[in-house]
Length: 418
Image (cartoon, rainbow, N blue to C red; front, side):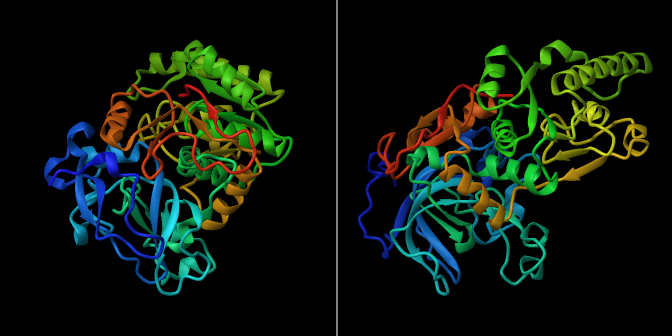
């Protein structure tokens, strides 16, 4: 049955009552491949909330690279774990703003009609790690909308009640859907894992990218100095606007990037460029960095370990250039540096970070807003590296600019990228 996408913003029920079906962009195992083929619109039954669960009417959704991976089935197919074996389909989307439509048993904090944003960490209420350690340590921990289905590219989504946060009223629906996954990740990396403090010096790789724009703002808000690595002068000026002390165009130091399998002569040449880069960072910051904000991995990690000061910290949450890391460990142990792994954020960290958005001390950075009929296209742009920043998708909102009810500067609209 064809789904009329012109009616997606219209709902025939009031809060508290769910319709029987909804429009959703669905990936199935038998059509994995490029997003333009893997994503297809289907009419799907609306899920009922279980105990401690909430069904949210999605007003806008944020696009992240994780659902390019879901479409491709690489590096690992999502269909072998989470709740995918139970349901047999994948509805992606790990960022959303919306309206609580129905609550399950045991939910007391939220009621139908509440306006919310959704953070993407899920874990079982029964795991002991959730109660006193950290939900990120729980065996059941999953990223909603990637490792689980019922993501945000649908008229309704099902989430755990603990995933909900008040929607900042100083943002539009699309702005509120744009920041969660990357911002909350950066917050945990710097504030909780690396213990960012006023006066710290910080090197930020990919400072104009989805993580870097928030790392840069967090450093400024904390009273820390930062140098951002970017790919152009235009992006450098953006990170200055976000509060960076200075920036470095990575093209000036292209020889420092680790490819893997370098010959001794090539490694000697690469190391020389890395030392020049480290000196530039220290000159700009007034000393070597206390913290290096890492998510690039293979290409940059040897330089990160070299550049951070003795007893300094390299905090890493990903490896976009490759996850097999090769570096001179002498610069780690002899200078007593630390490597810290980090992964998304827990509900408390998300709550504290979201308050900074409500106060306009941190601002989302948004490139483009697209319609619900363009979900596959948006992910294809990401797959082909043709996007220039964060993309939001209108779902329940039928036009840009809706939902804002309080004064505030809102999102920064800019072309961004590492």
